[in-house]
Amino acid sequence: MHCFVYASQRKADTYLWLDRKDHFDAVPPSLALMLGDLRFVLEVELHAERRLPHESTDVVMDHLREQGWHLQLPPQETLAAPPTSQEPTLRQDE
Image (cartoon, rainbow, N blue to C red):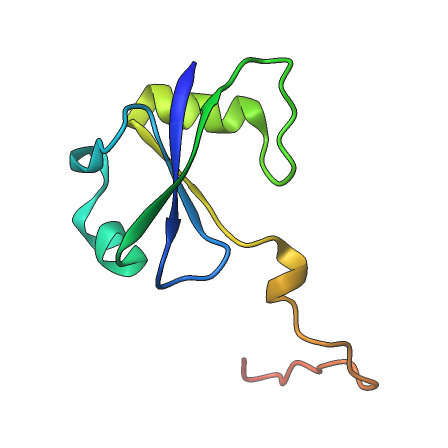
């Protein structure tokens, strides 16, 4: 499966995969607004044996087949807060 990858200029380490070059009509307007301007970064051939560093190839291909796009968010380690010495506690009224 041939696909095209674009980097969000607004959200660091966030990528939009499309099934066709510049096929932005497939992307929901709210997602397009959140991503802002996109920069083309990669054209790639996906197949079941191809390994991706941060995504499941099968998931990406399924999303591309079903909806024409796939959103790749930053790896979890870039979103995690630094560890604290104290564990958070839940209050009874939460």
